[in-house]
Length: 277
Image 1: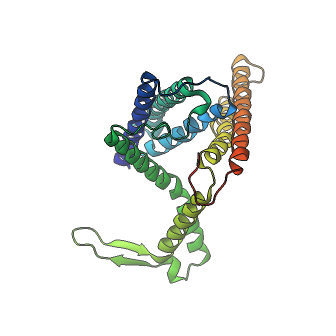
Image 2 (image 1 turned 135 degrees about the horizontal axis):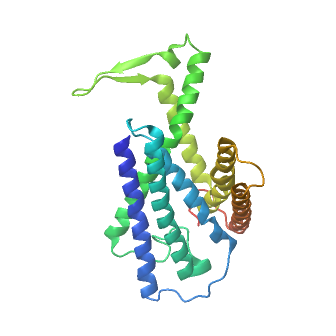
Image 3 (image 1 turned 120 degrees about the vertical axis):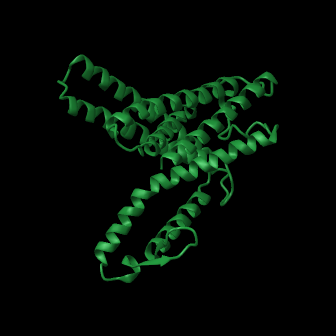
């Protein structure tokens, strides 16, 4: 898992650099002439920061002790969140400063930036590798929960409990569980179908990211910190944390409003199984 964490993190930084290079070349070439118009959809950049930071922290929580996991993860989280925040804020801010309301969901292809083609191929491959790994990390708890409940509810069923050993030359025997095979395959097929049916991927992800940003990234961590430190109400630190929480709530509401507005506009031209912005 440590190797997976390093590999996914490297791929994540790779396509961020390509995005920044695309913005730089287009600005230098004066590819777009436009007026920058404020738009609440821009605030949705927080969903990228929140989701990617969560993925980064999850895949980095794989280090062995000693030192203790808490000390290791404090350093890893500080470094990963800092680097991720810097790159995504850089991509979001420079992209909007350069192109304003015309910024597309995909900076790699949204402006006709296709040369050098090999650079875009590397960036797209990095995105695929990064998301496939993150998908695996996030799905494992759900897989484990369903499989554990199934084995507890049907302890006598060979379908849910029996492992079939498959010999692989040069490797250890692979334990194949039929329930695990069927359940995980169906899950991936259903989620893939749902993602294909989404009429406008970016707006849906923006809405989900906006709704998850404040409670998961701000409110619960702040409340847990206050409870852990037994912080008295109306103290200076308590007030600062509450102001931070309220400010992020306002940002979340603004981002959600922008996403809903984008969905309403996109519904006018919705076509099933088609790519959208």
